[in-house]
Each structure stands twice: as C-alpha cells, then as structure tokens.
Image (cartoon, rainbow, N blue to C red; front, side, top):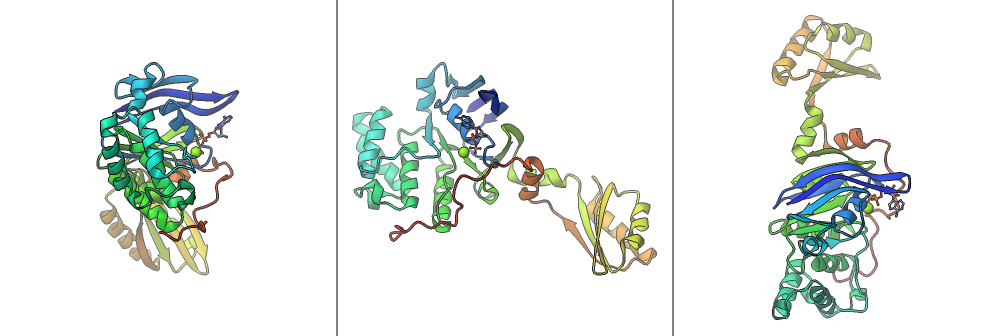
Length: 330
Ligand code: ADP
Ligand code: MG
C-alpha cells in the first residue's frame, strides 16, 4: 500500500504539484492521467525517491520514502520517462547489473533474470546489444529492469510513448499481465490507454488531483445528471416553450441546423426511461415533430476535457504514429 499525503513540489515560485493526497491499494492498476505538464512525472519521481518534495509525505509499505529510503525503494520498481538503459550491454548483462545493484542474492540471480526475461518476452533477444533492439523491445527491457528484484509496486512513466500501434498493444498487454502479480501505477496522457488498462484513474491537472475513481464511475460522474438528445423537424422557437413546460427538466441546450432542431435535455436524477416516455407524450400533445430521442452518455474523454480543459502544455514528444525504422523483428 502507498499513502501519499499533502504532497507539494515547487520549482522556485512555480508549483508543479499541489497538495496531492491519495492511497494506492495492493493488487490494482492505477493510471495517472493528465495533459503534458500536469505534474505526473514530478509526482512519480517523488514517489520513487528520485526527487525531493517541498512538502508532504510518501509512505511505501509502511516506509517513509525520505526517512527510510532504502527500505521503501526495495518495494518499488521504476521505469522513468527516459529508461536508464545501457546500449552497449545485452539485456541479460544489463539485468544482471541491475539485479546486483538491487541486492538480489547471488544464488537467485540466474533464475530471476530468466523469469523476468520470460515474463517480459525478451528471452529471444537476451544476447543482442540493447542498442540494436527496436523501441518496443527496449521498452520491454526497461520494464524488465523495473520488475527485477520482485518489488510489490511497479511505477511506469508513460510506458507507451513513442511506440507504434502494434508495440503499444503489446506493452499494454504486458502491463495488464504484470497487474496480476504487482500493484502497478502508470502515467499516460492518452485517455483510451488508461481506460483500457487501469482499474483506477487519477486525473491530474495543473498539479492537482481533480478526480480519482474507476473509469466507469468517472463516466457516470458526468452522467450523474442523465441527459436525452431530442431531434425535431422544427425551429428552436417551437420546441423551447414545450421543454419549458416539463417540470422534470433541470437544464437544456438548443441548436438548429438546416431545419432540424437538436435539444440536449438534462433530467437530473429522474428515471430516464420514464421521463423519456413522458417527454414523448408532451411533445406529441404539443405537435412538436420529434423524430429521434437518444440517451446521452458522457465518455471518459468528456470527463477529462471538462476537468482539465485549457491546461495542457505544448507536447514535447512525437506522437504515437511515429514508426521506428529498426522494427524488423516485431
Ligand atoms: P507531466 O509529467 O505531467 O508532463 P511534469 O511533472 O514533467 O509533468 O512537469 C510538471 C510541471 O513542472 C511542468 O510545468 C514542467 O514544466 C515543470 N517542471 C518539471 N521539472 C522542472 C524543473 N526541474 N524545473 C522547473 N520546472 C519544472
Ligand atoms: Mg511526464
């Protein structure tokens, strides 16, 4: 378990992380989701003891990351934004180096390296220089160095950035399989990724935690208020007075395009099916030519935009579409 309380990081006058508090339970996959510059890497660097905090506390499995760094760090495997790989070593040499640095006992070394390579799917390239591996495989080696030493908590900073779509799927599947044995925290600025992999989503915006829930609950957070989209072959002036008569409507929004009026009607906590039937009856009574009524479901994307809008910094990374040239083996 990880407990982060009132974490704040200032760079001079600039507050990169502001009073973050959350708890990470064992056995789940957590996603830090936020636009560039939100403070994800800063938070991860502090959680893993790579960066000091201005204020606040991080407790990893009962150990304070600042006071008992050695014990706390033993529980963590970290893949930073830029993986600390040695290009002139082979995966097996590199993993042996990392395992020794992490204090894996000599008699367990070979077996653990073998298992970790198996788990991350790099056994076939065990003896190829890391610099000659594709980006996807380099990332696997990066994940392998994080899980060696068997830490209970794996922290991965933007693990799929810069990979091609096929590699992204492979790395996502690998992360999901890691989630069966470890607690995983990953960061991403890609919504669909977090939605696909994570059990819990923490949306970070401008250094603040703005939402923390299961992906499906975040969607219903926006839905909390159910809404219905109504389309009618008439003008706004025809439909508006009729909507105003409906006392169960809490809010509405009208637009008109080429003779079709679209109304998004919010009905608060009311039963949507019943209200939809009631609306249909009232529109009929008032001769509003409604031809379509559909429930509106917020997507996680809507939640994300609503909670973080306007807070992204320019993207310093190339986007996912970029396909590395040396990918022949994948
Ligand atoms: P994310 O990983 O979510 O993209 P970061 O944690 O890297 O965000 O950065 C959060 C904010 O802190 C950004 O505005 C970034 O420019 C700023 N920042 C990060 N590191 C430093 C630093 N060493 N000095 C000054 N500002 C920094
Ligand atoms: Mg980052």
